[in-house]
Image (cartoon, rainbow, N blue to C red; front, side, top):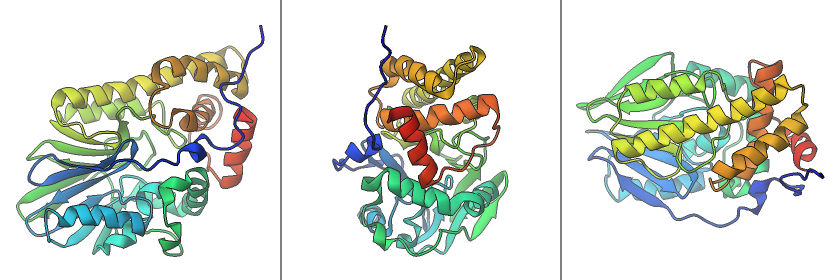
Length: 324
């Protein structure tokens, strides 16, 4: 029997994704909103008594202007805070568009920016050009936090408490969730996706399920995932957590079995892609994420407990090897 590759494209699957997505601006409470766009990266908004907080910025300052336009439709309060749920360029490079007083991130995220921010910026822009519309508007250099924390940090926007919490590693080692304890609303960043494929190129597969359990233990009544529609009921939140957990577990199990059978990365990728496509192939950016996800998982199961740095050159070498 002849085994076929899951794709014959020589360019990133994301390069074929050129259609603009419909934006939704969903009110979760008098203080919380979700800016979503059919599986593109989401932005969260918290409106306090005296200031606005933005969680994840969009990829460029020009793209941030549409978020600001939606914010200004509901409040004229100043945007004082930007929170980075993690270090990926598509989440942070729009920060300057808000002219915030402070950009806040975990210390682990800061350290990742130091270690691999330049490489990630070049890598992501090359992979997914549509998500970096008007990339020339990004200021030179990197986006740097002005405040960092480890573990937990609380801010008060007047009477509204906002907690920034590291619940564990998953999508990256620096993942931060933003939690409104008075309203039980959570902004998860890419720790949770909904009907969208988790990107796991910088992931910790062994840790991620426990981190999802830690999110569930907060019992959020609403959740804004990194991609996908806002989850506005406890049942929908449970669906988002279960879907993300199943994807991570299924991929890890497939890769682990392949490694145990002595198969190389290419063979493991082909088998895992075929097995996962039946259940998850309809999710947004499935074909784009899978080579990165399987490569990182294979690394973790074999010889690299911490993610290796993705560069534009490594991206292309990996893609040609697995999909070329």
